[in-house]
Image (cartoon, rainbow, N blue to C red; front, side, top):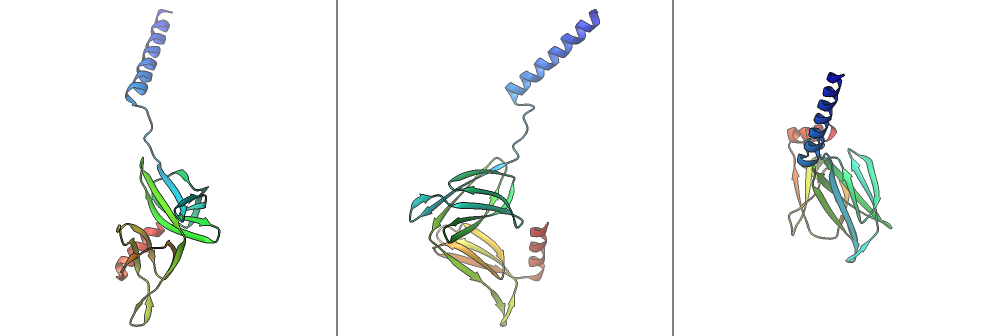
Length: 173
């Protein structure tokens, strides 16, 4: 009987120590594994509600109405907003425990991109940057069409068969 009482006291002490370590030091707290995407849409400077679709590897994984804040696993996403007949899209990188803020400004326009070498169309990796801020907006393989906010953009096309092959493998993996 005496050993059973001692055993229960030991179990109770271990439980108290673990609970104290959890509440005071956060020892047993699971690490954050998600990031946050905060998205706003504006039409002629006024914030509006628009449909949002978040894609990962070509599949819709979340739908919402802007303004919104979504918890997403870390990784690269394509985010589209749809308002009436207008669509805008942008790539975003979600990082663990971090917030990514995207603001879409309507109306938008459409960019169609093709790359040619000696009058033959070829595939190239194109990075699209907002001219005034040098912010990377999207990265696509040609040919492609993308809907963007009205504005000035710089495009950087890279063509080397080895780099293109590595980039395609990375996107597929």
